[in-house]
Length: 451
Image (cartoon, rainbow, N blue to C red; front, side, top):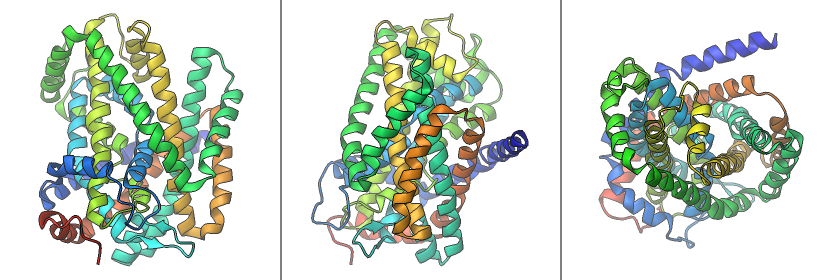
């Protein structure tokens, strides 16, 4: 019975994350990019706002705290192993399509952040709560779809945001250092408990310090690897671009095939990595201290830039340049490719990979706890938040000690199902997004308070 259920879930997941989701998500990215007159042009403004405190505005956490929490959930093992998987299945050209998806996904993340603040509400306890569920309920009058979104979010939080992440940490600790999974599970669960029990302010406070540090160390390590592979970096860039449009040009044993397959794997990995359009990040964006929806929208949009345009791209460049530098590397499996590529770098390679996977996975656990908690609060009220946190922490331990093939597929499936209601709200409320953008951004009124 378990195998049959797993097979059904995998079939549904493969279908949704195939061409249907690729077309719908990428189509939404393109539609919003043109409808909003390329908000990517204001990326530097968004970065500046993200590090500029706006304490006088209403909200629970700073704009940077909200961004850091969203990045904590978004930057995960997919940024490392996921990129390698795209390369093994679609060839080096997949890195280009992954990067391009991030560029256009900035517009979708912008729209999500705007709607989250536009339709957020204040709880009786004085806390801000928002996200796609409130955009669906208050903006479109579709409460039933909002409920479905929250159900899928709660399920996904236990999967991709929880058990698969703790499992990745425990597996790495066991394979690298011989630490039994049960001990890893206890440590991970205790560390998570110390943070998530404090709620959004505790999560945001840890992420504000943790995320920049882990990202800087990882990117710094990757830059060192690129320095070691210096004579192959330009060749890797050319190979990535050329093979994106002519996969057979990769040669050298790289995956060949059609442009369609190369684009599919690159786009799918980019969409899955940056979560633009999935509806997760706007849940924490709604808690940000911001004067108006557009300010937070600009800050939120930078998350996709950092996640995909920077981290995924630099990871892809490290992997492709390493394959060119070390012809003995095999690349039939994404995880194996990542490990072998990083192992080739003396002294820093293995510790860097270990550090990246552990910190990225743990940060994802923290960010997704908040997403699931707010979805649960929408479904049953705040009285359920402590119950949810307790179950969430317990599942962190469980995930570290069991096999997760079915959980991975269920997580992929629920992530896709989350995206569908969110995309409906983005498309149907794109006029609202355009109107707010016109008012605050194009008319240069970003410093004004929401009326």
